Length: 543
Image (cartoon, rainbow, N blue to C red; front, side):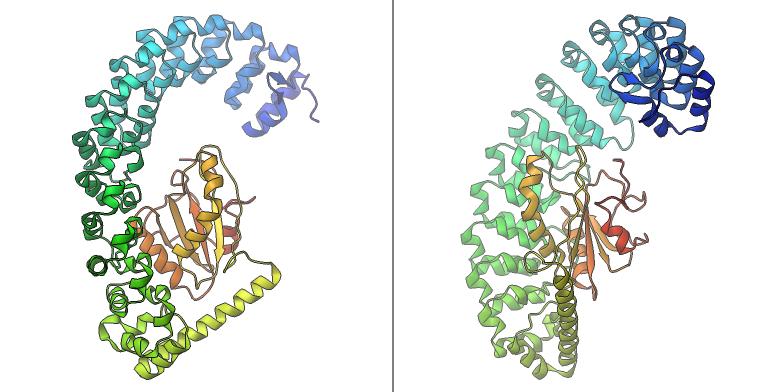
């Protein structure tokens, strides 16, 4: 246990030679208890030196110094937030309050009740830091004027989208019902709609205006809208344009309306449009209707895996899925088709189904292999190559499984590190023969309930690392184009891959901001495996 500092010269030398973090560890022994002799805590030179090196150092000061007006002014000039450690007399003094909040608006939280209800004091705090709105008195928070001061200050700054959303979430109910004010907030941060009044979330014109905002990061949470609007075709069309996953929360009436899924897949997307898989949120009638399915497949072959079992047994439907970019459709076809050599040969012989690529995700049934041999020398060679890769992956998998039993059909190694208010950074090891979507489907089900109990939503971002390479794909999982890229990166690997899930509020990859196409960060796989463990490869600090 560290000894108590009693000698002034020794303590001053310690302060000079020690880092701020080490000072805190060696000086603080518990709540309001310190390893510093009383005479040193009452010494201005000592406390000032400590405060200069370690900003919260004023907490060590004696009660006498915490009530010394001149000394407190000197401390506030360096660290305005330290008014929290000063005497009640200082905290309730208007002069000291203004000094503190002009340096740090959030110092408002430590002032006396009377000052937090003072119009001029709160205006000063909001001008310095709009987020200090939550520390104003209840009376002032309910005044539209003060909310607008905070909102206008945020709107005047770049990159304050998240803060606008936080401001709305902490506003009193009467402010959340102010249509004009909320419209201004939603123009900057569409997500703020989630916290607005029930009346506004049931106002069609208002909601449509929010959904058409310029907020490019906005992914509508349709579950927050009224039942009436979730069954409104105009609203839901606007929602799926922003985020195809909005299909999941469409009202029951629209789940049985083919016009919504038609609109969803018609939105311009990346090559290999993956929006089609959102047909999974439609009614059984729609997923089993061949006419509807064929129209959807023309836009996105990825709808095939979500169709009824009867349609998965229809060669015409399968062929269209292959023609429109779903190279994995054969994996989801019925066993009858997979084992029918005539159908396999027809698929591989059709130029429009790109037979050389079909084996990219093709099942290895004997019928498929026989068909490949008969189709053409090129297809036969491709089939042989794929069989060799499958055999290689099988040997790798058996070797790994022999060392440690694996859950499910493939091996998953996870390391958890939960952070308050943020998603844990997770690294999942997986064999290359499994697509990213399979990884997520398996892994997500395994821990989804555990995460929801903590009040956290799903991770927003993921990166795919192939072997020891830099990330070959990084993207927002709510974005269909990015999801397609993650799938492609995972499926194209000839060796093992690592998938890194993370919250977009974290800085990742040695401080570089995550985004599409990030591929210039050297991150060896051994370091990636530690992202969720003791030697985190990603930054610990939220942005």
